[in-house]
Length: 477
Image 1 (cartoon, helix red, strand yellow):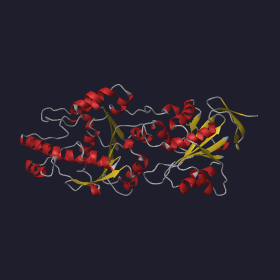
Image 2 (cartoon, one colour):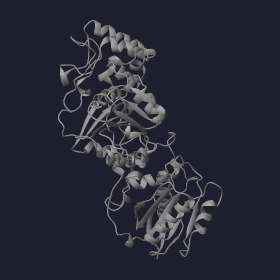
Image 3 (cartoon, rainbow, N blue to C red):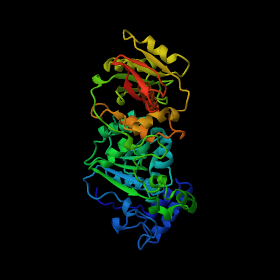
Image 4 (cartoon, rainbow, N blue to C red):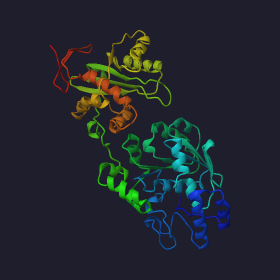
């Protein structure tokens, strides 16, 4: 895309449009009419170009685009990732660029974490599409029931909630604006569906506006050669923010770790309060056939619909005093589906036990497994969650910190979602139940002991005896 060149409606056209506006939009339209009559034009991109700080100056006596709010120069990039702090102008940038792209493509995808976010932020928000189009004298048609925005030239932008990534399977687009993709529940599926349909026009590409989180997807997309990452701090837009926000919020978080992420848009590899840190994770290949024990940890969900929890299913093994996480098959299943998957993995890895959490009604979990066992005759160990998740996980975290739990390399089995959950879950934060973590912790606790002195039978090489508080093992005579 070449540098933007804004076009404007005549004062008469803006006057006719004003009747359809309400509240602040009506007032802003009136201000624009006055500006046009005075010979002023409220262009978003000024003639100073990318060197402009966006503050009022001759010819542009109002706030407009800063240099960091211009699209990256050239056309050798695919993704423009605006990694900004709160209030840094990310939404305004995304909306303005989307308005310009509506002149160049026929179909656009607008994506946010939820349908409410699309409406309240991307479309109807104070920096959303309705607002920026009104400033430019353009009237868009917003049809929430059809999830559709129609621009004056006929370009159609369709809205998609990240809660339903499958809706992107099929539709074609020439451009996409993703708001807060770091916070999507299943960004991998959504991203793949989007890419398959991003095939209209001569140069399909995307704009992403988000405060960053250290998820594998965010890190991967920001490291791509065809991604242009622009980090923008809250301070870049401080003059346009309420005084109370500057005095209270900014002042409180300045100099803190949270402030680095939320004010400066930094991608911090570790989440404050998370039990695991990036440097706790070590990857090393292993031949699972040589392991002493292999178990499957299961953390069942109570239902199987799009809003239910996932059923955590994690395969882990141990050799002497080191354990490996081998496989993560967590997903949304019916009871029959997850029991089938557990038995598939039990047979595939020649496991010697299935470790399950006893929940959702007494012996339901064990009953499901026993009903569907076929000819396997598995050993089923039922654990009772008598302590909080954080307390139960603490000994396993210590094992990770000591380098005694390793992960199978990702080229064999994808453990990225488990690792993302480990690095981002903060106890007592109100976040969804960490089903992958729970399944992994059950498996590791069974493999590496629970702190007591007991003999554990193992079909893969005799007996083992815990030695010491950190679950070190030695073979018994």
